Image (cartoon, rainbow, N blue to C red; front, side, top):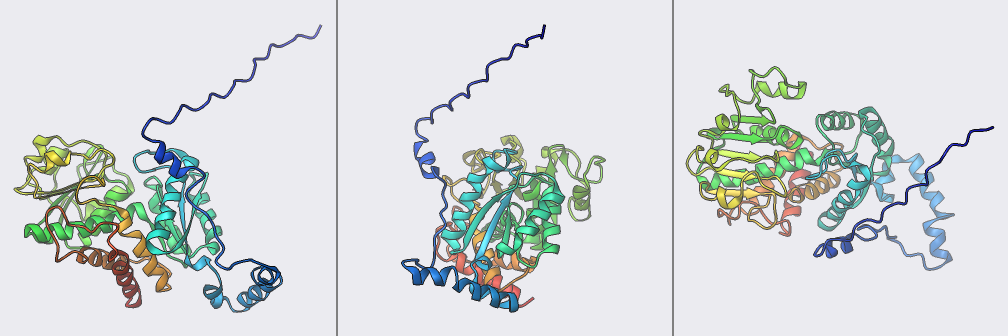
Length: 399
C-alpha cells in the first residue's frame, strides 16, 4: 500500500495593516509612484510618428553610429542622471533591500528634475556583490549621462565609486559621501565666520566613520581644518586601535594628530565643533566639556545626537538634518547643482576641485545674511543651484 503524506494547506497571505492615521497624505503622494516618463515631441499623427520613430529614427541612429560625438545633441541620455542603489544603507532605515529603497530613489530623481531640470531615473540592483554591482552599472552606463550612487553600505561604497569613476567616462558621485561633505563644509565655513574662528584653529570631532563621516572629515581637512578626531562604534580612531579596517587605517595619517584614546568623553573635551553622523546619543554633560561657544551639528535623522534645545544651551551655532529646526543640512543643496554643472561642462568626472568649488559657492550664497539660525541657504533658495552649478562648471573648465 502506498503511504499517503499529509500536506498542509497553503498559508493565506495576511492583509497589510491599515495606514496609520495622519500618514494618509504621505502614502497618497507615493501611490502609483512619483515619476512619469513623458514625450518631448508630440505624436499627433502619422507624420509625427515617422519623425519620432520609424523611419526617421533610423537616420539619427545611423548618424550617431558614424559620428558618436553627436550623440549629445540628439539623445536625452547625456542629460539623464541614474540614481542607483542596492538598498543596503538607506538613510534612517538601514539594509531594507532594493525594492523597499525604490521610494527613496524615486524621490531623489524627483529632486534632480525639480531643482536642476535634469531627467533622472531610479535603478535598484538586487545584488550586494561589488563585482556584480560595478559590472551592471558599467553595462547600463550608455543610457545615462551621469551616475548618482545612493544608500550603499560602507566600506563597499568606497570601492564601488572608485572603480566606476576609473572605468566610466561620465560623472559618478556617491552622494551619501560627497553631497553630505559639501553641505556640512559649506555650513561649517559660515559658522566659523560667525564665531570668529579660523579653519586652522578648529578642533573638530566627527561621530560616525561611515561613508558620510569619512568624506566630511576629508572635505574639512581639504579646507584647512588641522585637528579632526573621528569616532566609530568602538570609540576614537587612533593608532592605539588594533581592530581598524583598511579604510579606517588610512585615516591615521591625517586625523587625531594629538593621539587621543578613549571614547566620546575624551574626544569632546575642549573641542570647538561636534559633527554627528552616527545615529547615537551624546549626553549633555559631555557637551558641557567642549570649548566655550562651540558649534554643534547634530545631523542624525530623525533623532539628532543631541536635541537642538539642549545643544543651544552651550553652542553659538546649532544645525540638524531636520526641516523643523533652523540650519537644516540637506544634500539637496549640493547634488542638483553639482551634477548640473558637471553635465553643462561636458565633464567626464566629478573632481575634488569641483567639490571644493561647490562648497565655496554654496556658503557664499548667504554670506551677507549670516546669523546663528541662518548658516546655510534653504533648499528653495533660487540662487543655490545656479551658483553651485556655475562654480562646478568653471572648476572643470579650469582643470
